[in-house]
Amino acid sequence: MWKSLARKRLLGYIVAVVVIAAATSVLRVFGGHVNPTTAALALLLIVLFVATAWGPKPAILASLLGVASFNFFFLPPVGTFNIAEPENWIALVAFLITAITVGQLSAHARRRAAEADNARQEIERLYQELQESFEHASQAKAVKQSERLKSALLDAVTHDLRTPLTSIKASVTTLLDDQTARGDNDAATRLGAEGRQEMLEVIDEEADRLDRFIEGLMELARIEAGELHLRRHRASLNEILTAALKRAEPRTRFHHIELKLDGALPSVNVDEPALVEVIYVLLDNAAKYSPPGSPIFVFATNDGDREVRLIVEDRGPGIRPELRERVFTKFFRAMGDSGEGKPSGTGMGLAIAQGIVEAHGGRIWNEDSADGHGTRFVVALPLDPDGRA
Image 1: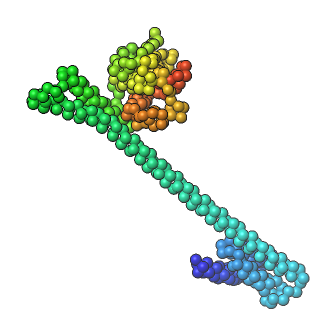
Image 2: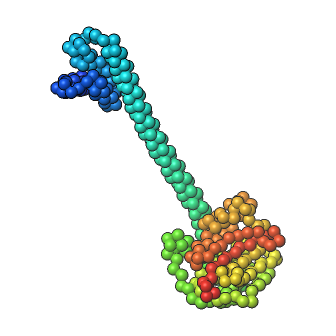
Image 3: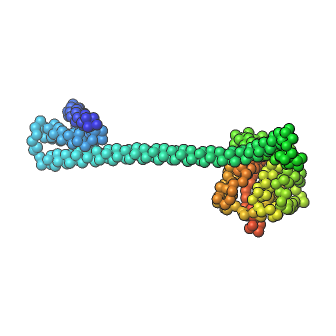
């Protein structure tokens, strides 16, 4: 680096000598038409050029050479370094001061420009480092979220696959033992008809539970991949709610369902099985998080010509405001993940419901119930100008 600066400075000195000599030669060629003022201005321009291009020290050398050239070739008596007239001394001193000042100012401006450029480059470097830091932080956050998702998925798979498998295995083992006991004529260990029926019902129920879990995983995968294809057709909201309530009967048998429908509900253009799934998820959620014997309210309202709203309201413990958005995150269980109780369910239902509703162009959210005791889930489906959803 130091060698490079030394070479550059030496080159500046050489350039200063050469350009002053060249300018003096050109001015001497036109000596009859050039007065001392013109020569001084021309030499000042040379000093300014050297200062701008090569810095302060070559500019000082150019200034001193310019003064010597101006004195020797343009101030009388020409050809000597003697100065006859006092005003010529003033002109020489003024030229020297002007040349050095111009050189210093130009060099200072050059330094400031270089400093500004260095500062700009430093700012760009710092910005690049900051951007890279943000990218690394985002990557670290994404990795952390991915690890949390993997942990949640592992927890869901462990709990929601192993539990029904354990029940199925125990029931099948009991039935096999009963079959063996019958072959050995061991009446003491035989199951009665009611016992065998109970074991078969456990197997059937747990197999359905496994099927729902796997179907939920597949549905989530389709939603996240943007491959949820709706088969829309005109349907009645009464029929949709009736189908959802019938499907949810095993889940809501310990609750009282109160259904309230507006009298002028329009028919809707939706994927009926998908919307039934949404209402079923909300009913299942309400039954799961509200005490047995408490009511579950189901409303369907027509908000003018803009949208229809389907509402499911329970009398459970409610959802804390900071968790209201998170309940739609896959594998999130509001009770288990918030530390309020044992996890229940797979944590996929509300995520699937949100995906289905948004695929219809609608919205889903939750809020406090009308009396402040419990949770209300609202599904809003937009209506076309002709009154169809």
